[in-house]
Length: 123
Image (cartoon, rainbow, N blue to C red; front, side):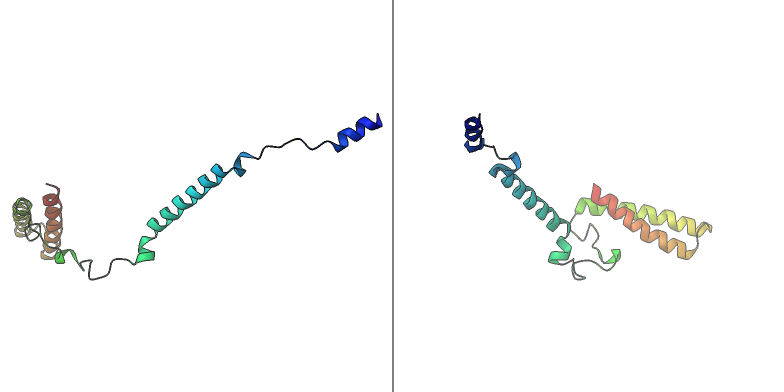
């Protein structure tokens, strides 16, 4: 019996397979996930890393934006002009009827300009 115990004690340990997360493919996958997250982080913080648009590239106000006609869009420029003429006519009519004040009419005209620019750019 002692010989049997000694033989078992001296036998080499059984071969153990490595855990799946210790294999090279798992490490490559982890490196890929790391690279993807690093790229996503760079995209999210691109303004922090590469600088936000400067005042030279962003217009100060909507009035500084070119109209579609000035930008070279003939069809959009015609739609813009027609829309703007119709809206200004309606606003002038409300001002003449006393429905809105002069200040409100000026505000509505700037809003009408933005609306018409948006509608003309979508065509």
